Length: 634
Image 1 (cartoon, rainbow, N blue to C red):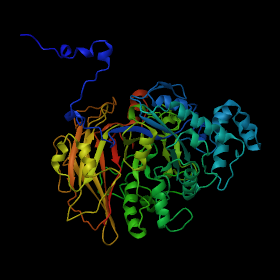
Image 2: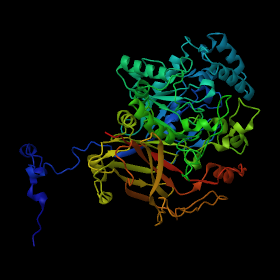
Image 3: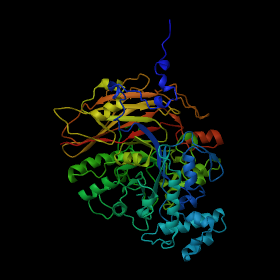
Image 4: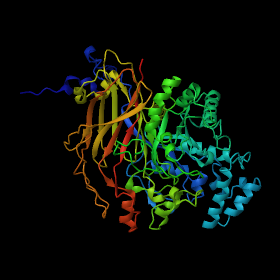
């Protein structure tokens, strides 16, 4: 039988004749709507990054042995091998998708100016004094120079000793230049940013400022510093002035509050006034996301605040501060994210606006220029604590310097967390798309690994929706994603959540998926409940909504290994609130727990043969926290 050839049937496609070249293959009208994705515009990928990284431009990094520049930081984040400040080759297992270098605004660039002999360091008596102290470049000289700077920046009401010297302007321009140089829309995104490092009485109220804009607008300002003000409300004024002046867009991100001694989510403003509707509106406007986990401990929950939560005591830093005031239990409710989210519901009832309505991200706060967040690749908080068998790696004091007579306030480097990452759901890997995701709170935090989580809430979902191939399309059409607001309930309907979680492809299996609910009752009291909605390994659930037994533990501490013989690579869940009251304000967020894996200290013990403090766990269960979804009556 003679075979039919479509090539022979349309020979004009293959000929070079002028007549054939002008012919067009007709498209049948019924094929015009073939592609289902032409109108799709919702976020369709999760992008992992770090909103909080310091380089040698930061005084408390560069004066603590850091030598890497913003250029080095961006190259490392893109997957290049980089030599650390102490000469150790370093590389990420996989590149990040985006990065914000957030060097401290306070005397930005000072260490580099000292090292390079920049003429600006002869501008006044203070700069000449610190230059002379630094000149020998010995460890003692470095320590003494750091002391001079630290005492200056932590003196209440101190004026910037480098004001009007051009130091800030010079190194801000270098910062923005580096961000522009490495920004590759669609492949790798850089953000211009800085850290405003306010610490009244040593209490951490730091914020990172992240610009949506490029150098042309960011260079129209110089960063606000703690020399200018310690008050977050003045930062919000500065952000408003930036947008009014440049037409640009900017947001602020508060650090984890576990070293704030109760100030991060206080019941009064820094000046002592009660919270007002205006304060609540401005805080929600300028601070849409919150850093819930980083190297200085995890700030999601605390066992004293959530005694029914067996996973609340994770990488807990609850005794230290950077000031002279010791931590007391009454401070804890004003430091941890879950409690703040609950208290925000009460404030919304009283003020009409929720001041603590924020999405959740994690980041590193690394001061090494290296954004490392996994347990097996942890380069320490500062360069002086990079991987080594020297006891300083674990014994260096992090907190308690101003309370030397009370060691109960001390936290040492062994308790540092290899954490974390910020995950955003976005359409494109660009500044605009990622920044917009942060602004609308469609983000989640991980404690360092790259597990993927997607959540939708709505009134019309059914369990069968988990099997839909158009899971996201349906989720956006019939509900709201993480960070969103549910519409008012109608006709007795209760919200349902659709959840999918996928392990890090190069990491650990999943133990369980949990829904955390917080709500405000008619008497104005707040409550929380935890529901294990998916348990791996065919485990059932108990009467109190928990997996009926632990997932197990494959960690071999002596060899710093584990296996994925337990847990599941993917978990999904449909969950409808069984106790929903349409008259009660509420929020829901998802926590995904991985199976146990070796902690970074366990890897150190194996690699260097060093001893680890007895109370440091051999294993950790890394996790993700999604931004909440809020329900407001009416």
